[in-house]
Image: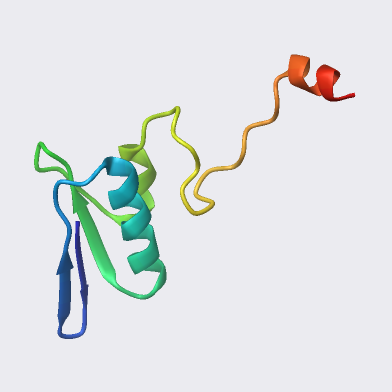
Length: 78
């Protein structure tokens, strides 16, 4: 991940995807220009960061809606 703002530049490498995406979203929300590059060299812009996360991952900074509980869980709670 590379984040740039004015004359500042931050580079993060070799961290988990979840951490990289979380940091990228934070930097982006604070006005930094952020690009995340995967291991194959493909660059992702902020609107594409969620594509880097596996389906089972927890939402990062409210990026995905929370799934509804399974009907069985709702019945147990009642």
